Image 1 (cartoon, rainbow, N blue to C red):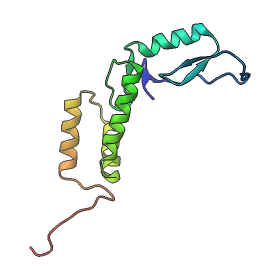
Image 2 (cartoon, one colour; image 1 turned 60 degrees about the vertical axis):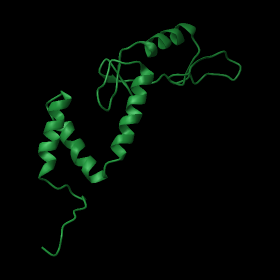
Image 3 (cartoon, one colour; image 1 turned 45 degrees about the horizontal axis):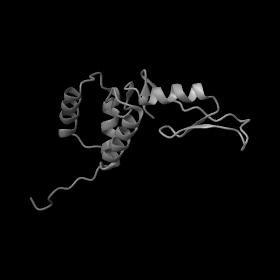
Length: 128
């Protein structure tokens, strides 16, 4: 879920007293339902403003839809890695103090170059 002001965005749940004949306002970007037009209007302005950040990579400021798309893309790229390698690298990223991407990439490359991870498949020649 994208970040708003550094915190995860929590969608509004429909009221439990909602009846099938009640008039509602639907926000297609967040897939939320509102019974009050002012709340709907405020949410529409909020999701279209460039105040959102991708929770996976921190890219932003973007709109809500762009931040969601960024998270989907990042998840696809992360799934391309072996799970043992991804788990180790994510642990390093979570523990890292640096926030600039070039510093983080250098840290990961330096760490992973000469190390093996639990569960990682290793290939080596037997006849040498």
